[in-house]
Length: 161
Image (tube, rainbow, N blue to C red):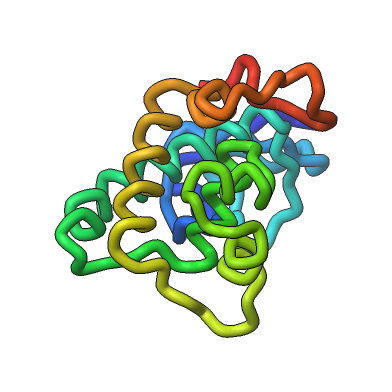
């Protein structure tokens, strides 16, 4: 595999579509380089650390673009954003229930409902504030809830940006 560092890399996640520079991809075709690589046409791989970095950058962009609008009530968290929040914070629905004070059933419905649902006012304000704190200090939500990282499987929260 050959390492290629790409500018204008398109990244899509629960928080939206973003474009980032200096993204490291790995390609099998040794003839590919930064000048002829096309993200839409060529096969490539991203390492887990790079995916985590892109996820972190995406959260930062989402916060930058939406924080004030959510606090003003002009925008709300959507189910997609809630799924992204749970993924980014490495929390489960029961953890979300403890954070928000909603029942586990309501939190599950918010996360998995069939229709796109906007999570209104107070909960959106709380979630965007928690997301900002998590962005600034990885693992904040888990520590706030007293979750021992050693008790979780597939936990990758340690060592992230």
